[in-house]
Length: 411
Image 1: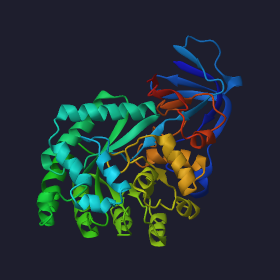
Image 2 (image 1 turned 90 degrees about the vertical axis):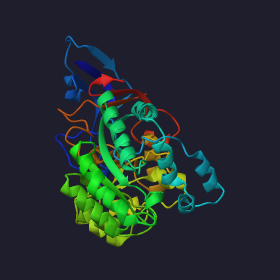
Image 3 (image 1 turned 45 degrees about the vertical axis):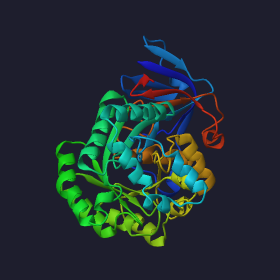
Image 4 (image 1 turned 30 degrees about the vertical axis):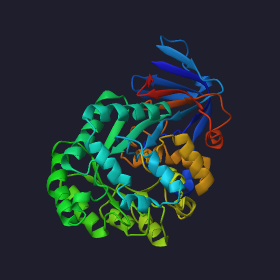
């Protein structure tokens, strides 16, 4: 057993498994000052005030966290970290004035990544993704979702999902896998979209489900990508084979993506930079959690999702990085939290809940992740000596992490 003692503040305590925090509850972070925490194997065995700290026992390790906070690790519910190459050339093009849509229509964007990925061997793809995974783990991420979507052919989508599967087998971090074959329309099918939809629904989805390569099916339902009707067809097929719905929606316009996601009982609808009252009302009447990606807005210089309006209406929100080569080449969640506070007027405590318990809910892992709870996995962040939780979002340029635990072991 490992004892962490003299903790300045134990942050993110929940007495029992929680679904996700909504509205006013999103700003409440339960904590305990001058605390201890006991790890037994992979899980949190006990915690409490220091005056109740276990006396001398045969602990495997005793760690003093004097002046330091202990938090649950981050839960990043939307990433694309399996890709073949970076796209800094497009970054320069945007600075020069070209829009995301213009770059995509000229063969850049997702299609650019797909072309490169199709030519990249499995081993090379795995090695580069492993480096990114190790990077985000070192920054405190202890649970992650990874999407396919840069293959856009049967063989290459399966290759991507197989890389994700191998990462999950090779690293202590738990990974949820999402099939995103409907990320863009491949060049060869752009004059015959129904043929690609049929490939998705009649070959790819059945194979992915049969081989257990993904838990979710995602669709980029947005202006210039997949229509609501196409999304409906794809998600209907996914449900038939047991893949649960997720959806990219309303990044580039109000397109009905939120509503079609809710119709298919999507666990989350993600992006939502373009969101109005109808979308908020629809989400309030559902169990679907809106997942906001402020890193994308920052990098593409597009509007931010109306997080403050959503929360004040009573919604819970999740924050995720969208780590990918084109629109968010970063998996740094502390920076993401700062963006959410500065640009979307979220309180630091709201941002914290959005990347812990709400992030775990957005990939259906809130029973074992996302909070300091007895019996949950000991996925923990021990900070360097800092003043309080708000300081993490405030001092956005520094690394405030001293140690990261995954399932009871220090990275």
